[in-house]
Length: 403
Image (tube, rainbow, N blue to C red; front, side):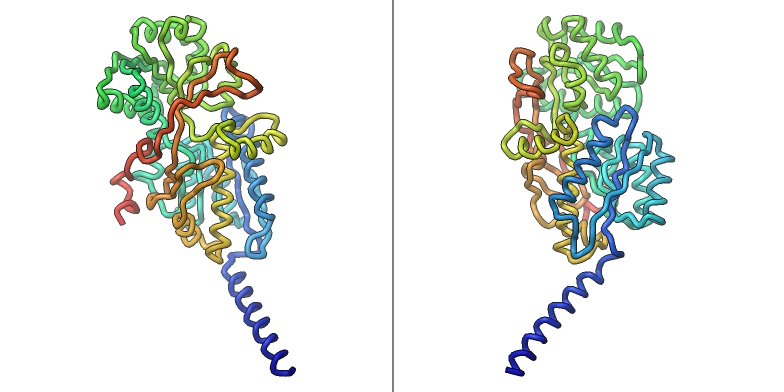
């Protein structure tokens, strides 16, 4: 009896030691997630409180603890300003003991926060930072890009549209680096696939009257008018195009960046016929609907691809901590790269060596009002775009991709 009890005590002691060893690998007594976003500005609807809600849903679904430590969320508003975003990130890492920063809309802020992350050797996962340089020439073992990049949206849209017969293009391009890169990437794909680019016009950012630019595009007789722009120009161009009868005249508009909340704001009468590429659509299948309806119950609107991506990456991050037995950033990132990423958000997903999460995208067309059967029934899925085609190979400028 004594020997048997002693054996049981030994087993219990070993288990306690193993548990203590695992807990000892945690940096402190809480796993803290920092959602750094735009709470009140032009990106707030597409990110903002919706991104915070998505992160909290992931924490709740995970059980609120990992390796015996509670999980908490802290929220910051960077106001779309790189200096403010960088300052918040520095304080979070130095004072608040934040383990990972999430979301970070607009590329300028994302790159500023990436610099701080590299310096502090913490972890950053972006969802609404779009520049391909993030995982290209600025790639970092501490920074992960989860949902999209500008190349994937531009190339994915152009390639899929040309394959479907849209072989003549005219671009309305925001006159700054973001718009130029979208036009460049899409133009290359159009011409490579046998199409023609008939020209472009370049309105400045936030141009109040876009009529002359839209009329020039209409007069080109191009089959496809490519909208190489972000807010607010992109939505105003689509609205103006609808008013001028572009869709009724047989031309189509292809938005190289548009979100479901943009379509909701425009309304189907203005947006009908628009082509775009997305990483996620809430009404695609049972898995997307189940999660999105839970999200809708909290936010009273359907999620953007960025907000759905926050949930996906948060779950992947927490599972990686559990499997790695530590919250050490590079070990967690390595664990995230080990397995395929298959969930309601990602199809055929994988986190590559350059820390870009590659997954399938979807070419969709906005429905006509009479085709929409219920609220937020906005998209007809036209084609799947395999992730490797959309995102392309790793950028040779990224040293991590060469290992």
